[in-house]
Image (cartoon, rainbow, N blue to C red; front, side):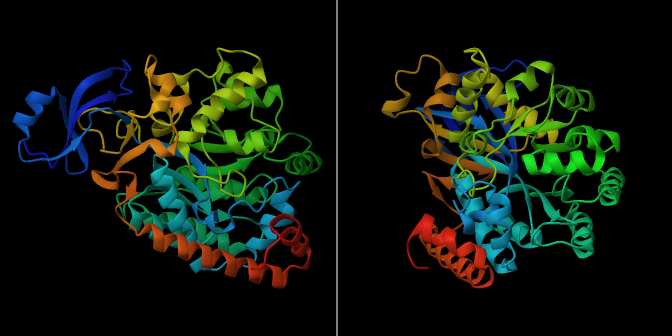
Length: 452
């Protein structure tokens, strides 16, 4: 049997149905798939011609799936930090000045940071999605990609966005192994009912999923309540929108009845630990899980989180839910890891292909360096992965069988060049936005205090 890559002498967290953890094991990759797992001696004899990666002192995980983000917003990093109603007062006014080039450069930076933070697949929702797809495929990041659709309130609205969102799905279905196109209506208060119904039907007809924001703000909850006399989740359920093919970001401003509707419908609530904590209102994620909801974990965008470090996000999930519930047993390490591997893979329609390490699965893998002081002594591996590691411990990342991060460095882009490019592009965007939006001048003076 042929293999082109061999990871040797590693600890392998398989996330298989038995949740086996293999010590001093080797893993062979042939093309885009995992070919074999076995003892180092036998594997070296069997695959003597394969390129070798030394896994001594390292832990191999299935590639992590970031279930809700906006990669291209890297050109706007941190602009809504600690700003009340920052989505409406800052983010949308800035986004009115976006160009396709901004989104391409932002997505390059976001995808690069995501890969270095352990993400091998990002579920992305943004404008100019064609440019995002161009960036993610260039860097080698797998993406579940949807073009943002808004009919009201937002920075880019109109029938043309509805049609582009649908056309994007049809253009990209089966076109590239790293792109899974989905439909991406923005939220319950920004997309009118007949559009939501149309998108629900198109999703069913095309066999793709739906990714949107649900009950992310009190303003959204108030609008839906005034218009339809019910909560955001209840409204989506009432019109027949919910289902196992729906990823619902945030689900913060919901009541107990709506939590039960998420469970009954199989809809996946998306928990963004850092963003929720920084805004002072976390999702009741552990309670949702206890009720039977299929909660997944994500970073959201760098406007509210500031980093695309999914490995580092995981300990915040555990800590925040323990604090919220007062239960030290809330959100155990295994459950957190499941939410970004096997459970996430199932939710994006890639169950049996991603999320576990087993022969025949796609070779999306993350290798963590476990030889640092902060991971020693290693008494409880899963707890150490969740509570000791961050993206700085990511040594190697493999997507679809290709090494895209090696020794903590990107192999598919020049990092220094990318830093300079996103800095230049972001500042040019802010200059344009400040020139158009008088209401933004206060933000730059009060929060940043330097010239663009």
